[in-house]
Image 1 (spheres, rainbow, N blue to C red):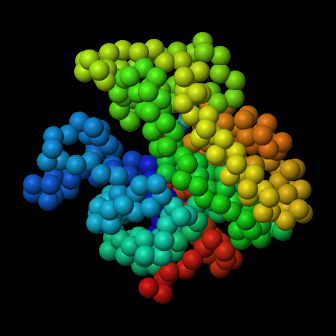
Image 2: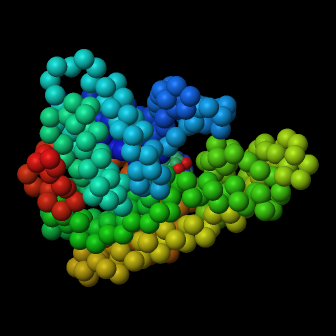
Image 3: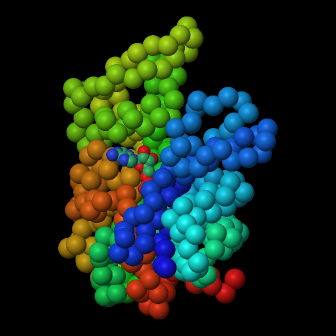
Length: 333
Ligand SMILES: Nc1ncnc2c1ncn2[C@@H]1O[C@H](COP(=O)(O)OP(=O)(O)OP(=O)(O)O)[C@@H](O)[C@H]1O
Ligand SMILES: [Mg+2]
């Protein structure tokens, strides 16, 4: 029993060897404050977002790539692992992918949660390394491989060669901040308040950060801030572009920063092989073209970018002895 877990800010994915992805749910917990009980975890809890009475809170235990609620995080991990392992007697080995900006105390909390959920041995791996493995890249060779992983909370950019990270950066600029920018833009330009889900849907259908025309449109619903009444509004791809282009500029800067820190020989390899993109944010319309234009290096999304990290985590069991950097053996705890 070997399990790979991608503990993401937005989604938790679990993969098990040949079975592939066995769980893919949002990192959300719904909690009853009166009875102090957990009501729902994952998909079910996510449906309640923004629709609960006062005594129920819907919590995202991971926020901006950090653990914001230790207790809820532990309960969430335990519940997800229980769902995939069931009543299995054999205790699994686990490789957990954690947000790379996580602190020691936080990673310790993740380890404790995995242990509480019945793990026999636990390893932590950094997201970029897992993403490359999941994309089927051979990272053992003395060759530069660059990855940009854009999730919900953080964007990680890294260059990996010979099983180790050579240069990297992590910025708290990813899907959630992009959604927040859309909410802010709509409220200041149209005086209409929209919810997180509406903003995210507008992003999914309209985002074009490369060559927006203003012709692609969709209707959204919100509340007028002055009248206080529900209203409909037509948004275009140009609106979304204006709302988020500052954010995508930050992503370009992050890639440039890592390229500047990378030794020239490896930059040559990256120029030949291109830059791989993973994570949900890599699907942002036109982002691959924008990054290609701004860096002069071909940027392309990995196959199935949202499951890459989790698949890589279970793939990493094959390399346990070899992965040095970016791979911490915490079985000693
Ligand atoms: N087609 C799409 N276009 C733009 N953004 C998308 C698309 N599909 C998903 N996303 C965004 O991707 C994000 C989730 O990606 P992912 O599941 O990789 O994050 P995560 O791994 O949970 O987060 P992190 O790695 O930061 O901890 C969400 O913000 C979501 O809005
Ligand atoms: Mg991720």
